[in-house]
Each structure stands twice: as C-alpha cells, then as structure tokens.
Image 1 (spheres, chains in turn blue, red):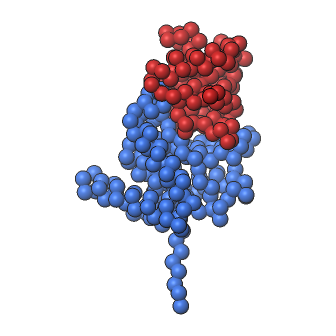
Image 2 (cartoon, helix red, strand yellow; image 1 turned 135 degrees about the horizontal axis):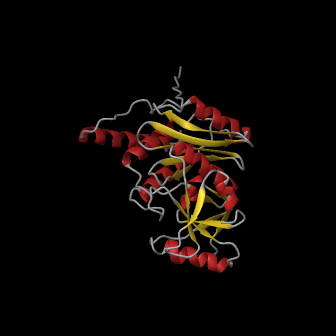
Image 3 (cartoon, chains in turn yellow, cyan; image 1 turned 120 degrees about the vertical axis):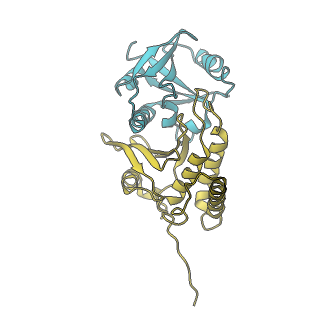
Length: 170
Length: 125
C-alpha cells in the first residue's frame, strides 16, 4: 500500500515560528523562511512560486527607505518573514493576491476582481493584519485581525464574497 | 479648489499599477509617513506638460523612474472626507491630500476607494 500525505496549505509550515530576538533565533527564523520559500517553489507548491518571487523582489526593492519617491518607510525583515507566512497560510482554493508595498513599511496583498470588488490586507511583522475592501456596490469592510499563523475567517469570507467562482483554484 | 478639477498622483513604483487590469493599486494613494499624499492639479494642462511636471518635480528629485499616474477628480477624493490643500513651494500646481483618518485600516479603506475609481495613465515610451 502506498501512503500519501496531504497537507492543507492553510496550516502547513505556518504554525511554528520564532518570535525570539537572539541571534540564533533570528538565524533560525531566516532558515525557516528560506525553507518555506524553497518548498513552496517545488513542483507541488509551484502555483505559489510566482507570488513568493514577487514578494522577495518587493522586499529587495523596498528594504531601504523612500523606495516610492515620497518618503516611504523601509520594509523590515520581520515584515517580509510575516508576509511569507501569510502567503503560505492562504487556503489553497483562494486566488493568489498581488503584492503591494505600503508607505508605512507594511507589505500588502491585493485581490482585485474588477470595479467595486477589491480587498487589500497587509502585515507589518507584529502579528496583526490590517484590511479594507469593497465587497460589491455599496458594501465595504475594514478592520484589523490577529495573525496567529492562519488566515482569519473574516478575511477569507470577504475574499470569497468578491471572488468569481472561475478564479478559485481548488 | 473646484470639485471638478483633475488631480494626478504620479507613480514611481511598478507595484502600484497593473497594465493588464488597467488599474491603479490602493498603495499609490496611501499617505506618506508625514500624513500627506502629494498630488498635482492638471486640469487643462497638455499631456506633455503633465508628464514633464512628473519627471522634473517628482521623479528626478528622488532619482526614481516615473512609470504612470493615477487621475481622479477632486470630488472623488473629497467625498471620502479628505481635503486637497495647495502647497506651491515646489510648483504652482502642487497640492497635498490631507486630513487622513488616524487608523491604518481606515486609511486603507479610503485609498482602496480612490484607487477603485482612478484612471491609470501609463507614461508613453
């Protein structure tokens, strides 16, 4: 008999991470992120590869201040690490968002399905998600949620509400 | 400032627009850390001059590439509760979007609403 292990992208490799501040802890965290990126870019997780590449490129473009020409704050390593965890934690059936750095140094994610169907969420390395969205004509939602390694249900519900069935990947 | 005035936000990051979706992303309209978003009043200005202003007064001082701009009416911005205040030290058509809400999620909501209605104009080659 052949055993097959099936992992849910919403929890696999996102639960365990360090918040320590020692050099060893930071190195471990970097190794963890590199491992996640490497695994996500394997054949099994290839659909996330482009987003992780875009995330890495965004970090490299924005780790120094004023990357937008208007005085934006730098994106920190902690924010990048959290953004990797956020992307990796998305339920597999949700479309992959586009990466949008923010002047505050947050890394944002945008799901844009056309006019009045947009949701933006961002992280900044403090286990908090800030989000805002247009959920169809006349409907909007915004707020903050704790990011504990899994995507808050409120966020999943908002994205599901504006996401066309044809855009869902699972 | 008349609500019908055209307002341009110059875009110096490739992450702030999508050519395929012909859309400006919300990040382009978020305020800078000083609490303002820099814009220019472009009503009745020829296209070439609009791009010249962007290159000379926005991109070159920060040594960045000017990729595109987001155009809106002043009304679209002010109906969200924001204000557009002329600030002509650097250029007579320069202004700042001010009076942003203090909470980040509220700022993001306003930026999403403006970007949702903005028109993307990509700099011609």
